[in-house]
Length: 231
Ligand SMILES: *[C@@H]1O[C@H](CO)[C@@H](O)[C@H](O)[C@H]1NC(C)=O
Ligand SMILES: *[C@@H]1O[C@H](CO)[C@@H](O)[C@H](O)[C@H]1NC(C)=O
Image (cartoon, rainbow, N blue to C red; front, side):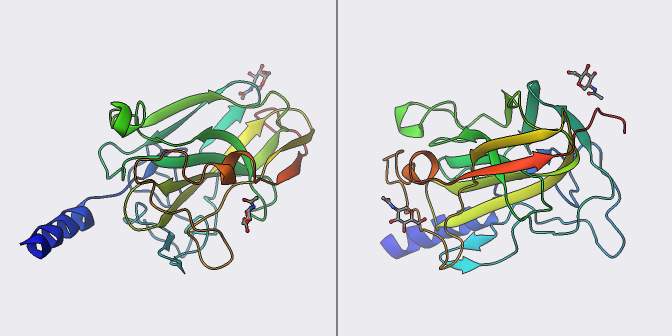
């Protein structure tokens, strides 16, 4: 009887979609508002909601797709609000740790510009009454973020409950700002092969793995040539 119940649960989990970025438009999205044509040789990806790492295995490269959109899909301005949105519904795996990051060097390094730790997609931790309703985050970009005509935006997520997975989608944005540099936290990668730490299931403790995001971290400096939104 126990076996039967758990196999039904597994079936239910596997048919639910996971989470999927829709803004900034992730590479080869079928769901984002702008829906650019994929670059030559690439096709629409209808599986953007699957993890790139699971139970110690690397399933896909970081970003899923390493060829950028032919053009950036939006321009953000240093020091101003930026909005990140996810497709409605989806399986939120009781929350977990999300980061929003930018790469100024074509994907070699990513600096974090915003964190939603512990209960990403929820209004509070689910075991404190949090509701699974958050699909949009608006935050201020650092005021000293340098401008660039192309940065890679990366959303990363370690889920609270379920198989130990690492989720990631990437888009392509411009940053309106002065030339300069910015020092911040390097993106946290976990549950993504032997090179990276494993963050276990939270089992109700929403501080699980938080040290990899707050204290046991690496600072990096990125530089940009400056961009004013038009040239
Ligand atoms: C910091 O993280 C690394 C893996 O990234 C781990 O090997 C090390 O044990 C951690 N250190 C502490 C103090 O938690
Ligand atoms: C770029 O930023 C400047 C200064 O904040 C602003 O006046 C301008 O409208 C921005 N341009 C674009 C295209 O966002």
